[in-house]
Length: 472
Ligand SMILES: Cc1ncc(COP(=O)(O)O)c(C=O)c1O
Image (cartoon, rainbow, N blue to C red; front, top):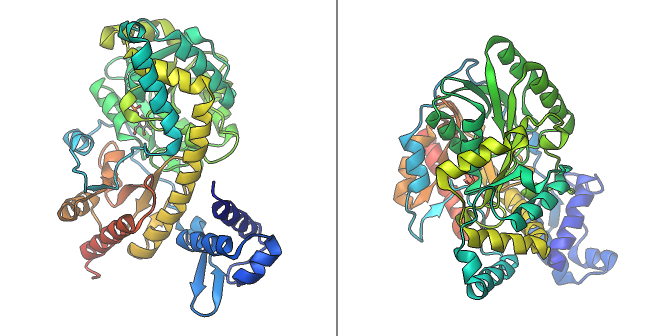
């Protein structure tokens, strides 16, 4: 982190702790430089950064004033999905969103992809190339069964950071988290079964549910703490729910962290009502808090949690390396993996194992998180500034996506269509619901380095939304 970034974080902390109050003027650059023993240019850069993120505002010829956004007031309400099992309706729309071939000047604000241009990934490029050059015979071998042992050992070590103590033999390597979720569903359900999910929910997992001929029941979800356990209990009393699938850490799309006591209570409920938990942990290494949050799996003593994850968000999605910590289902999962794809490609597994082993993954994710946290604050500020009045915004605790709830009258499918002329894409909110709720919502990606082009694109999205409301 550069000195001015570090210094701006210190000032931000001071503001959050009430040392500088909203409305108060910050010391002049000269005074601040003398008080804190840093150069005037460092103070200047730090103040500018704080202004970009909406924490302070500058008044011409006067100075910088604290104006931190009171995001709590902007948060969406708890979701209220239909409380009965339904089929997933969107099918072609999801395929369209995920397979659109974006040209280089397209601004994909709807994407869930990470930034793969960080300097901390250079060491990964080197490792990958070295392995391909020096160990071709190993690379060309199939990594059958549960996948490369060296990688499974490293994953076990990585999982310990979430308080989860597994054995390499409990891990099955998959082609990304999507395959991990699909295989887990196959392992624990049969056609016609009901699966509970958080709501809004990641569209990829809903597609996997639909393709397995399952029904879903969406559970009301709070934007800061996740699913409502009382709503889940009511659903369990009414329906024979086989499994719950959810993203409790740095959730996609809401960005919340489910509190630890809630994770434990969910597990108690799973034991009492005898259902399986499919925990999608893909975003958790990008949670902003330190240490990273615990998994539900870390409290599992009965082997009823299948924890799915991948390196798609932390390293790169194109590597297609994921895994399932399969609990009591490991044998079945290994068999299902064999039937589906036999094994995953060897080279990416070897490279990631090495990246982890050398401690470079930790360094890289630390850098990525700092970048994303700043991106979040700037994107919130832009949405706040450019979107129609009454817009609500999530406050992600990790990851790289923002959930935006616009006034009811806006249809984000229509908005997305109108944005095509500007070569801008968003992820329409309805795709995150099983049966078409959240039409007035959308998901925005803040993984790129914030720049004028992206700000202009966010402004266009806001203007087009206002146009649909007929207020401009
Ligand atoms: C919550 C969640 N699970 C799974 C996936 C799919 O991950 P992968 O690319 O590793 O298959 C994504 C990708 O966006 C996701 O957000």
